[in-house]
Length: 112
Length: 111
Image (cartoon, rainbow over all chains, first blue to last red; front, side, top):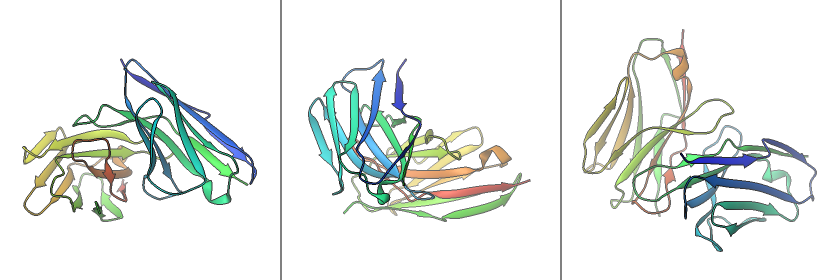
């Protein structure tokens, strides 16, 4: 069966520090991968998605970036965090079509 | 551009009553409509979905209806229980990579 792993679960980082969040998927090949951010009490904002190794589409301009160095690995990064980067970050995978996404357990990021 | 509106933003019901959450989508090419439930501090989880060739789908106490002409779809929860309390998100997709999510409905079931 397919599983998705996301870490760390919580993170407190100072303003201006770098960020690296990692997501891996097991049990499937060539998944579509997604990074979402959810601000406190808000909806799901799509940040990046990838349909293959090295293929990244950005949905919103920001100081975050994403990379997909391997088929089942998706990384969210920042060189310098802002206070506004705080939120709940969710990785997700899907196969496209009519099968739904599966979300990871999320990373709660607090920038202080 | 593509947009999904979701109403209401908050909903309180008495235990045992029904709850209805409505979503409207803008892109008539959308053909897949999943619903996600997110409990406090947890990940969203798929609870039910419907494809555009179906008007209604049921799974125990949960049902989803779709009106393609009006471009809206709804989630119906009957005999609500305290564990139904959560945030519910609708989404619309054209069967491609991206889902457009609604802004969420916080459902509170009062005991």
